[in-house]
Amino acid sequence: MVITSIQLENYRNYAALELNFDRGTNIFYGDNAQGKTNILEAVYLCGTTKSHRGSKDREVIRFKEEEAHIRMCLDKNGSSYKIDMHLKKNRAKGIAVNGVPIRKASELLGIGNFVFFSPEDLNIIKSGPGERRRFIDLELSQLSKLYLYNLSKYNKIVNQRNRLLKDIFLHPEYEDMLDVWDDQMASCGEAVIREREEFVRVLNGIAGGIHRKLSGEREELLIRYEKSVEGPQFLDLLKKNRERDKRFKMTLLGPHRDDLSFTIGDADIRRYGSQGQQRTAALSLKLAEIELVKRKIKDMPILLLDDVLSELDSSRQKYLLDSIHDIQTLITCTGLDDFIENRFQINKVYHVVEGTVQ
Image (cartoon, rainbow, N blue to C red; front, side, top):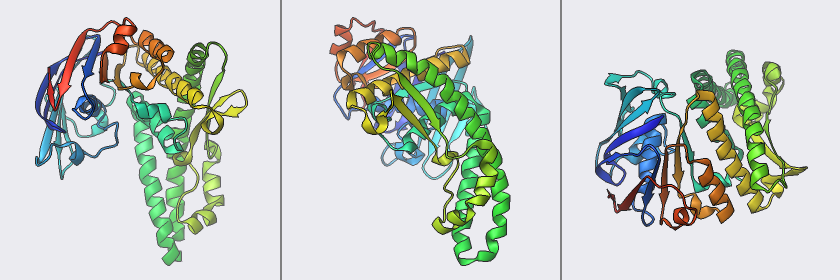
């Protein structure tokens, strides 16, 4: 799986840009705030419908413009795909694949598979639970349309239930309506939990081996899925905890409250790990994500590395670069010294200066 080209129109600081990519390593270098990350963001957005930054469509449209376009060509298993994404300030985005409009953004997922790795990901271990749930959801949504369907439905139900819990405070007679939402929430929630458990089980097996190598065989990393509720007990516990939910006016258990734990020995490194341990675990997690996707889709994902090398020491830099030699990779950086020192194979280099790319 490779991206062959991308065109941007009125996207962030690019009025117009057209790039052809090499099948190997593509490096974008230049000073900070020149537009390097914007290119990676556009690739990820066009492939997944979401910005890795969490930006809304209107925020990526060039200043003073009303709409933007991303056009990306991708080759996968001998087939070519052209994705055309039309972003609008005040309306939903429009997407066409090979000239055919798609009704739902979810229909785009699975055509390409992307792994995004940024300096923020190195803090995923010590960040809040929301960041770790987001990590699971972004990857699983690319790998499983059923997961995306159940997750989207579940999130809508939680929002509806929370709204009802607030209304019940003023209108106690509405409480019987909770039964309807509880049944639906438990059904979707159990499906979300099952897929997350399997994802984390496989991820843990891969990440453990990577972490052992990165730590010189000194540390054993264990990743666990921390559930706030066991799937089969979900409905019963929703009813049992209803008074508490009414008191707090929100739903306090379910997959929207779950987390990942990372332990080395008996120590929870989210709280007690050194910065080195946390960063090594985060790197193991992202490299394991790449390997998991490869196993799942029987193909290589496309790797997007946003200025990560500057955040790693030399040994971790070398391990990362040795791990990605067979994957199409788009990398941003401020200079090329790290690649030269590690004797890394560079296929194409772009210099980015104030929204122009050479």
